[in-house]
Length: 144
Image 1 (cartoon, one colour):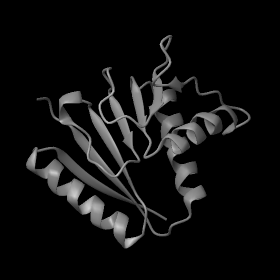
Image 2 (image 1 turned 90 degrees about the vertical axis):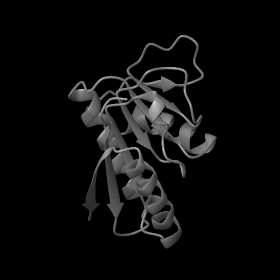
Image 3 (image 1 turned 180 degrees about the vertical axis):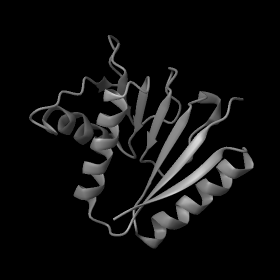
Image 4 (image 1 turned 60 degrees about the horizontal axis):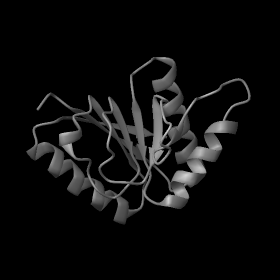
């Protein structure tokens, strides 16, 4: 297994709109810097649909080509879905789900989004422990 970098992005409040805008900027940064294939792992089908819709209108001056994971004609570098084990190779995973990502997917980097609620922070601690046992390189970033 190759080295996987895991970054936990901790939010100081539960402003979901602010969190999602941060995620959109993270996706945009990955696309513009050509980090490779990016998978946005939504927690629910509804969230995946919202992300898909918002990426079309996120910024007037920016276009982020993407598609949903179930699209059979996909060839975009950014995929959105809520499946745990997508049938593709991704360089970066942005995880919004409650479960840690499968290291068998062998991404170079995993971004874990951590809201401020104690329940979500508790889940993040379990993910941290799981990644640590897999000997991933873990870091944390506070988002104001």
